[in-house]
Length: 77
Image 1 (cartoon, rainbow, N blue to C red):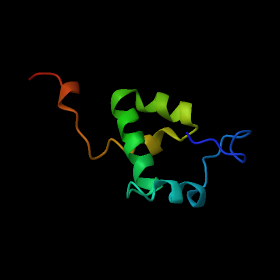
Image 2: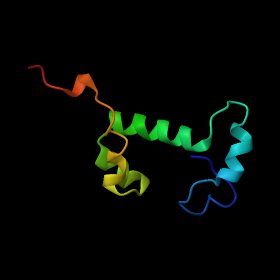
Image 3: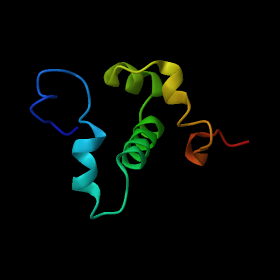
Image 4: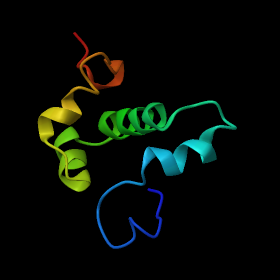
């Protein structure tokens, strides 16, 4: 999480207008980085726990696992 003067006292994320110039050098927009981080969290931790921690709706985190199948979590058949 990026902390700014506006975000330090609340739970809202830093604005795209604030973060975009910082990320311009790497070539990735804030949305891509956020989605990538959420995908990693949801696939390594319980999606419901991630949702509760980040103040999201549990169904919202399920969008990040809908197109990803981790073979390590499947039982051997």
